[in-house]
Image 1 (cartoon, helix red, strand yellow):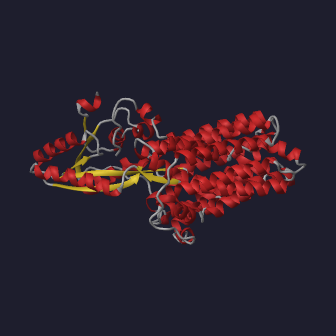
Image 2 (image 1 turned 135 degrees about the vertical axis):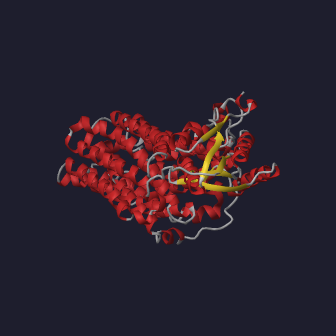
Image 3 (image 1 turned 90 degrees about the horizontal axis):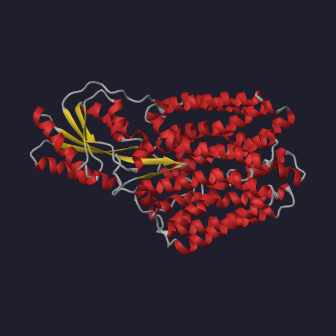
Length: 544
């Protein structure tokens, strides 16, 4: 459950952040623009450097080849340099190689410079979240939303920057990115203090060892096939459309907006209702159908298909990230590195293969191959579903139960009233009270962060149990851990296993950021169970 934010102005609290946070978020936004920056200028680059589409697409291949390999190294580097040092090194490499990209006189030179750019971006992006979490005000959820805002903004405006500057010259987007990242470098250097280094240094072999887990390996391989389609859309569509830089930029701006919105706002709501395996299968099947329509529908179908694909890809990205980080027992940074090491190689193969297929055959074949890869992705998951744990199972449906009264607490001002009501109901029936707290894990952009420490969650439960026992009640407690989107399901699963007769919890928290993103915990519980649910309103002082 999520503790509500205090006060009555969540937007003001969200934007009231230290300069170090804004400096890091700004630089992260510029780092994320590189994903779609070159889309509007691919055709111009091919013309200016007298190259074929398949040669120009090597800009993606070199970038993501280095990014994939660096997934094995970023943890090793950041655990030794610390957050600030890693950010500055990454920003310096991005700025330097972006500037060099603008000076390229051949495709080979440009491809080499993009590889260096990928090195810097891997270092920077992998470290930015942990830095923002440490420095942000308002808790981990606020920090996560700041990072997601930087991600969404960067993906969305990257094509616009490429289009605006690329309309003058294909070199200008590279120069523009270099200038912006220099500003970000200076801001981080000036405003971000030295960050503590990791207590345990990562080893280079840890991500490779993590892939021995069949569930994680299956998730990564499935994501590889899905990402083949992802990068086909990203790297090949500009050539298929053959429109102006401004037109391509606007199309991919729409793609980026839907990608961000569906990843942050829509996917968590769907995850709370459907199993990961089922939701992933339907999403990928729809994406495959969309690619088939793009193969035979002409330019209008491709334009619409790209934008709609952003929505489906946003959902798929969130599902895969959650599965990769939670399906095995590996530490989340290690699992993320292993997963990205495999799936980013789709960004090595697809950008080169897609235009090559079009050159050898036609555009329809390129999209059909991407559709086939998209359909292989869920087949891998279904074949290995027995190794996916709870991700291969449907959400548990509530059943009739008896006895225990569940008191669901979240660390808010409502907890005292929830405990009092649960104690009263238990006393009437002679049942025990079990205090349950769900420690939520936010998963996004191939990373994860907890809204509170494990020790903090367990201490919250222990304090509540002690208060109930002091009042003469029979009480036990447990602190669960679950992905934020599935936290209500974790409570329901536990209530069923405990033989609960009633669930007592607080009502919707007014102005709570978590409720705005994931939906009210109380509303989700009430809709998902046949068990009696008692909602306790917050104290007058909290609602005021």
